[in-house]
Length: 320
Image (cartoon, rainbow, N blue to C red; front, side, top):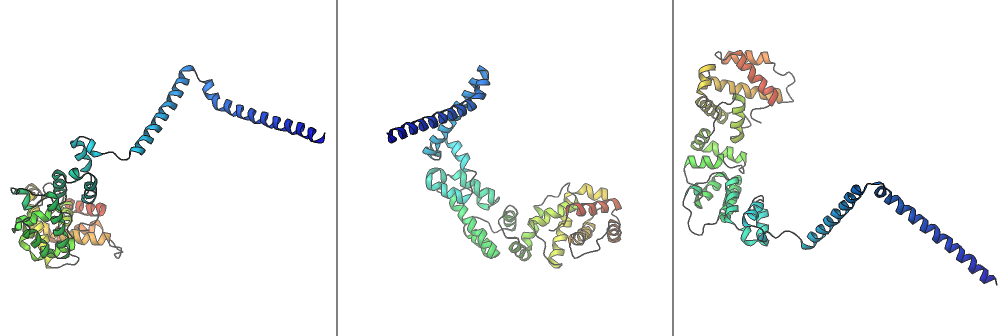
């Protein structure tokens, strides 16, 4: 009798809990459907369409994940080559492990060679049968690394591989269009090979450039020594003659001569040190710079010298 009453009470409790749970589920469903029910038929169709598009995107994404990366062999060759052209040499070697024919394409390796080493004597010769730009890239890279350890040995290595001709102009062009050479080793080499330095200076075009900007461009390719000496004087002398040769109109209008440019270059270097060095507390004023410079270059106008000061003050060191 007691057990029967207990079962009746327990069944009533379970039934009540089930009814409450169903009620909560229906309430939650109504809450979620409320925005849809309040929408117009057109809005409802748009919402359903969005859900359908989202589902399609998720299925497409899952399908792509199952398929893995895109096989470049299945694409048109022009498109595959264009995609691989954005890789560097290391990544292109890795890509050749997957796409051997595409990764060894001569067009890609030719682009890598000429983008890194803009000028080599071998570019202008008739290439022998079976020539490989990939092999040439490896030799150029080896030559550059050797140059950065020993400049003379690096140039000798490139000549031994018939990549570079033993002529000052050819060596100067190779240096001018290459950005992988260590500037300290380059400075040592140019100090020893003044014939190459002369040819390298003539490759610069300073036409219609303001003097401080031209000097920055010059020292960007031919780095200035850290201390004043014979090599720095040689660089400034060669720059002065080249700047005047590139700007004959400025020479006539302003009265610039190689000697005047030489004086102005030294003034700009000293002013750069004065304005940028944290050890100089009392900075040179514009008036002081004009007065000191015109003592050495009397033919130069105050306005021109004042513009030189403004350029260094706003842009910074000419030989940084």
